Amino acid sequence: MSSSRSLFRRLLGYFSLLIVAYGGAIYGLLALNATTVFIIAVTVITIGIAALLIKYCLTPLVETIDALDVGVRSFKNNDFSITIHNKEYEELGRLLDTFNELATVLRQQRVSLFQREQLLNRVIQETPVALILTDSNNRIMLSNLAAKNLLDYHQRLDGELLPPLIQGMPSALQQATLQKQSGLFSEMLEHQKISYSLTCHHIELNSQQHHLFLYKNLTRDISRKESDIWKKAIRLISHELNNSLAPLKSLTSSAKKIIDAPEHLHMLPDIFDTISERIENLHIFLTQYATYARLPAPSLAMINLNELLEKIGAMTNVVVDLPHQPIEVEADKAQIEQALLNLVKNAKESGSALADIKITLTMTPMHVQICVSDGGKGMTQQQLQQALLPFYTTKNNGSGLGLALCNDIVVAHSGNLTISNMESDAGIRGLAVKMMLPSCFKSV
Image (tube, one colour):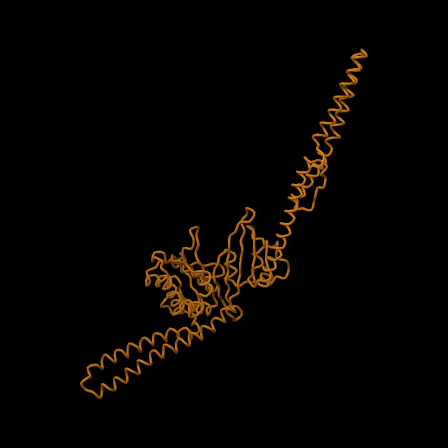
């Protein structure tokens, strides 16, 4: 900046002239034998002039500092539009160039950030997944259109408290939201089975705890997948029947030939045993599918859940945690028992130690809850979303009907079934499957 003037040289020049003038005045007064009063007067005047010169010389510096103060305050208020153009002196010019470059960079970053926020907000609003972000006081900080539709709330959600707004949700989803619990939830609503996936993340923003809820309605997806799975099941059954009928036909043909050849009659028992074994295996295979397809309506009667769970615990050698006060519910004892046995069987096949498998009975003002938990590896998010689909299985030899059958039994009792991982600081430590039976229970 060679074209700019130097504040230091300006101050040095003024003070040099002042010292020369003062020295000349003192020399003249001494030459004229002036009195001390005159010398003091000249000194005072010189000092006053020096003060005025200092103020005059430092005025650009003071103005620049004031401008910088205003600029920094504007940064604090997220205003990056200020530019300082005073570059009269090269010492200040370098500082002002740095300030203006910083302001330009911040303006560009703010524009870029604003554009990204606009894009992110557009994506959030258009996504079919209902999104709700709350603070530690359950006050909604962020939401999207899908969340408004889920809550049937057509005003602005941001700033509202979440608990009063979830009263219209399915009861299982409502309870999971209050407990900030992830999982898959299915129940009957207005004679239609609906399924939701809820994922709850605990995140920290601005050094404060927040909760992010993601709701996905899987009802349509599950219906479509169920249709595809039924088609797959029909193909599977046809394949299994053909695989069984072909050897049976061959064995029957061999038996006819043996009858015509008496010397081979000793082979007939083995052939008949093979036919009988194959028919029995085919019968078991078809019974599994028939049980699911022809689930009868529950035959309701008052049953003592404490006694039923104690019986299941004794049969399966798993831990049972019961309340001191026995509980009765109106349900189909055989179906509830079958559902619980299936859940315990799944828990044992999860890789969990037997000591970690537990059946817990609790009651709330709204529900009776039976929870079967294990210490296995849990499920992935994709597995959770498909766990209740018929014929979906993660086991090599599984039929994929256990959880689907349990779900249908619970739904037929006007209850709901929820599946969720049990998590700790060390990660997933098992699966919890909860049967929520309706509130029409009574203590005995």
